[in-house]
Image 1 (cartoon, rainbow, N blue to C red):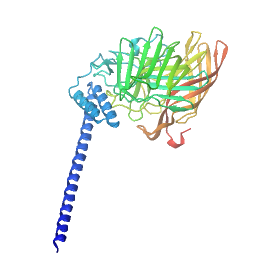
Image 2 (image 1 turned 90 degrees about the vertical axis):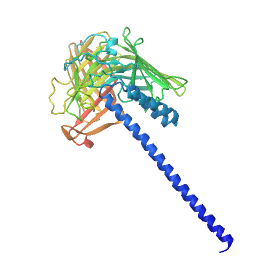
Image 3 (image 1 turned 90 degrees about the horizontal axis):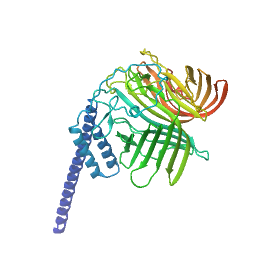
Image 4 (image 1 turned 180 degrees about the vertical axis):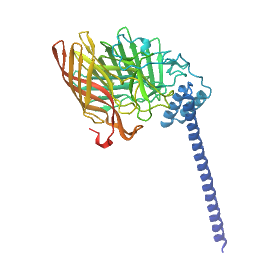
Length: 479
């Protein structure tokens, strides 16, 4: 072999060796990176487990949860340094969390009807500190450490209206309570549902001096607030950017007529329904306020104004048989109908639940309705029936009922749904082949109401939230 050929062979061998070393080294580096990523994911998983464990022991873990949400948001948007900061804050916050305050426990009784209650909601009814909630040292509301039966608190604001030009507006809003699921506000306009605002998360902060509760989105660029003015019965809901420009919303609702009571916070409560996944009852108290509203929306450099009606749902739900909500039924109870409809002469408010299960409740399920007339009179419907077309996503409704000075005879047709196809869950603890649904609907109502012999022709719109149950196969029950 020539000298030149020998040099070429040696150089080739050295090159192959270098490539091999590089590949081995790079493979080891990739393996270390993969292991490091797996370790980070595992640490985050352990953090979440610790959060859940301590939460259901009554510890104040919700600031840690807020940091976890912010860390995930920062990482999602490529800001890894900020994500690390929030992650470390979450770990630090979770290490030495105190127990949430305790309250005197209340043995709440049950009733099938609380529609005769007369009083106007107070600030304490809006935020029942010491009776259902406690204040964290971090400034937000939470359930007390010695009463973990609470499963849902409704700070729900829904509205329906039109612009001066006739454009339709429907709004679905909620301030998520501490420890409960996030919410994206939904608006129906120009013939479709839109979501111009970010997702809002708990915890639910509370400013006692202004009677305001509020939430932030994950990046803390937006805030949504809900303020109650009891002297004027005003419910003001706002969504706005904290800095700079962006879409914003302000709805001012003035409640009128008698408040529709589900129950005082100390009881008695109503049975909202039987839960599907566990042999349990969902019971609730609180109230609804209904009246006229005006909404201002700024979107895509345009401003819109709408006029119509609103409902403020300020309710709280408990498990009945289980002592902790995590052990009790977590699904929506069946089969309830919660709705209201208004036109210039009146507002009709109603909630009614049927029991499709073999469970025997201690009292009958809720079945109550009230009609507030704009002349200042108000009447409970002492006898009424609500029927639909039998589908798990019904489209046709009938309300017939009597009150002391007249009667109601209405037919309703749903024309907008949220979601457009209601979620259907198969199986129930009493029937593995049955199916249940949850959804909301905007309903057009026609018919008449008779008051002291005077006939009021009805051409009204309203909003409703529903669950339904069917014992037949799910695909045969959709409308």
